[in-house]
Image (cartoon, rainbow, N blue to C red; front, side, top):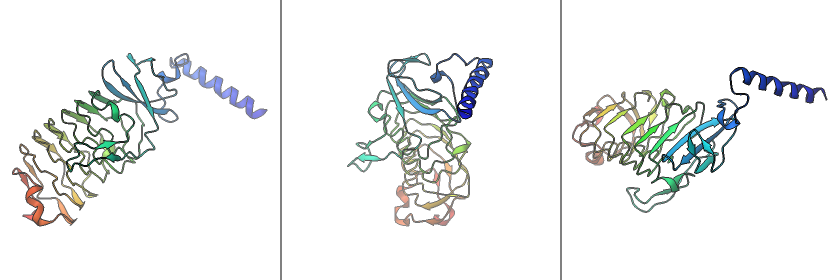
Length: 268
């Protein structure tokens, strides 16, 4: 009995506390809750956006939320590792993925994380083949647990803006991360810490419009085959990269680096 009374008291107290901050009578879905909230994403046909939130409640399809009509709602992505489920072409142009929003990939024009403390363990394949998206803003995403960005933005061929943050500093798997982001002219990856090993297989392959890349010297593990292939407008110096643990074959280096890319000293 004492416990029940205490819980009721705590509930009332929380409501009163909320009232002092102007949230007491709001719908739970309107209240950000970084610690205990539910992470969800919403696709809205109103503006063709995919928005990520962490709130006390989750809106339903058909609701008006954040001035948009909710077309679809997705949950469970913080704990799920999504994978490729189909694909026969070597360039991934027919690849399919089990991300819950994959069927909307050609409708989505903008992606944004709107609330803080959304903390997935992987963002592999999240936005692969989003062929209509132009901007992706992950500034508020907590990527400190992320182990893989494999194909995260592959074939986002119209994307011209991508925003990350310092929590991406230790992500090790960058295989095909920006594969054929053909409209991307500038990319800031200064958040990626030097000194830790990363796999760079195909990371920037096909980024034919890329002119500037902010990225400190890296340590390569496993591979960097095709890492900078077809980066025809990019001038970038890899001479200080550590490739002691890389297994890229010397015979394949010509396909891995476009003309403006200076190879690591060990391969010069």
